[in-house]
Amino acid sequence: MGTYQFSDGFPDQFGGERGEKYKSKTFKRFILVIQSADISEQKELMFNEFETWRGDIEQLDDVCMIGIQF
Image (tube, rainbow, N blue to C red; front, top):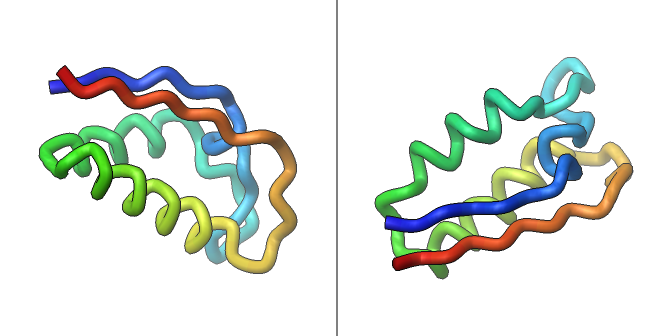
């Protein structure tokens, strides 16, 4: 079990096929999907998800996430 604190940088990033924002609802769903993975694997999955979503679009904001596993 664990918890995350995060800035709005990931959800506000434009990307995907239509160049839209990722959005908080989508980000929270993604966290629920990866929650059973080991914390180090979650880090890699998040990084890959962000980079895949962003594609060639410039990163607009800082992305800060803190994951705590207990």
